[in-house]
Image 1 (cartoon, rainbow, N blue to C red):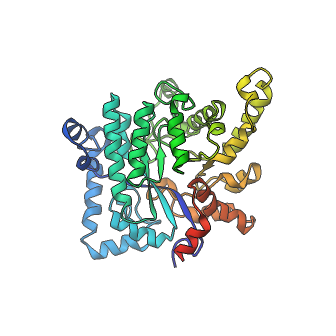
Image 2: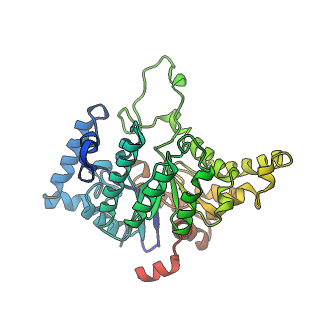
Image 3: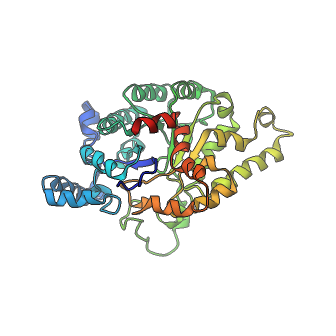
Amino acid sequence: MTYSRGRIVNDADAHTMETQNWLAPYLEGEYKEMYSEVYSKREGGERITKMIDLAKARKSDPEARAKAAENPIEGPKGWLGYGGFDKEERVEALDWLGFQCQLVFPTFGLGAITRAATDDQRYAAARALNQAQQDFCNADPRLICVAFAPLDDPDRALEEAKFAVDNGAGAIMFSAGPAGDKSPGHADFDPFWQYLQDRSIPFMLHIGPGTKTQPSKFKNNGRERAPDLHGGGENLRFPDFLCLWYAPQEFLTAMVYDGVFQRFPDLRGGVIESGAGWVPEFLRMLDHGWYSFNKTDPYLKDMDMMPSEYIKRAVRFTPFPNEDVGRMIRDSAPELYMFSSDYPHPEGTRDPLGKFEASLAGFDEETQDMFFRSNFDHMMFRDGEAIAEAAE
């Protein structure tokens, strides 16, 4: 019996835990030296590489490996998680989990992109990361690579998206911040959105690039800075957590207001690991804004649907396991939300399936199936019924 206990489950958020040399095989020249190591000493590189070495040593120890594979969801997380960076282990973990598929996002490999000083550096790092991620996902068709295409340059963003999709990527991620010096709704990006729509490739916004944190002056509170969620120093803290959904709201507002979802009615996307309790009120405020400003704003007048309807048609969201997804559904619509495990990150908890099932208690099987399966299939342009039959 798998962890999913016979339920058809699509996992909208899983990760690789990159090794120190994750990018190096896919880089040449000056970039090979620049990005040869994913982790610096400042980021706890020595501590991280020790954990990676422990996980590698486990593979040659049958007893330790069997113990780690016994219950991956409740076992060690991060680099020590079963299949965190070893693709053979990930396939075994996925067999145990029983999920129909997983979207696979990078974790710390994105740092090379976000720290880049020039577009050349940025796109070279993105190309290497996308190749590394695809190599990991090639281990099993259930692993769906999420590639990263920086939107800083419209032409190069499209070029990178085409390269990634041609090499097997199933979704394209980018920062939830502005697209370089432009809105993502700028006409210069229309070829990019057209390509995603034509190829049935969803876009992804994920915690990380573009995420807003508590402004620095608010952090000047006269007290010593607390450890982050993982007890270290380079991750989110409580005040930052309360800002997670600011950037996705700004990005989606631009996509609605600038007419992207109207010009490309079949475009789809996901907002991943940014919580979802904010979504019902966000939809109400979008429509409230339309009623308040449409008499004088020609762009609002030209909309062929209410703003919230564009979001409901195009976008899906992943709640955190400890959020009340049942309340969100009652307060908005069942088609908006979908399951994610965040495997092997600790934020996914040791029983995300159980937590979500408890939140959905009382809903009929059709609504539960939307959350665990079909909303994901809609976002991914997949024929869910045909996939389920093939899996059987």
